[in-house]
Length: 135
Image 1 (tube, rainbow, N blue to C red):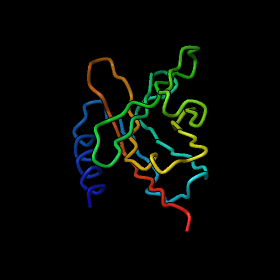
Image 2 (cartoon, rainbow, N blue to C red):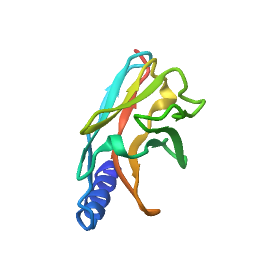
Image 3 (cartoon, one colour):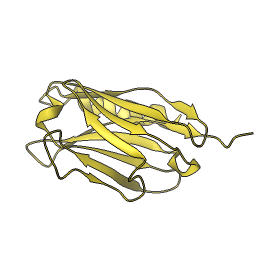
Image 4 (cartoon, rainbow, N blue to C red):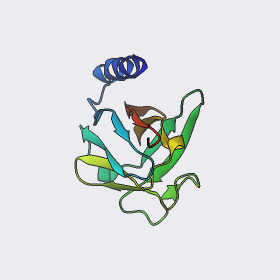
């Protein structure tokens, strides 16, 4: 239910955006610890290669946690120590990706992709992967 509320809020916010920028993400996933997955944030209304983009997450009962700040042409991309070496961001002309390897139970969260704009405004979208311990 919470995911649907997040999505509803984001879709409503984006519908009124002046620039008609839209970010859409893949749906929820369930993975076992140690497995890998790739989150995809589809973009329209701008070229993601021209903007700084970020991934952040919200773990259950916690606040937002920044994960990565990425620009395709930058040598100064930044990763949080919590994901360094396990997660890798990448972009193409219509998508922003987060490759997640060696997943841990603590990676269970709502993940948001965001992009910088010419103002302080941020545009975001969300997806919720869940991890369950192996039985």
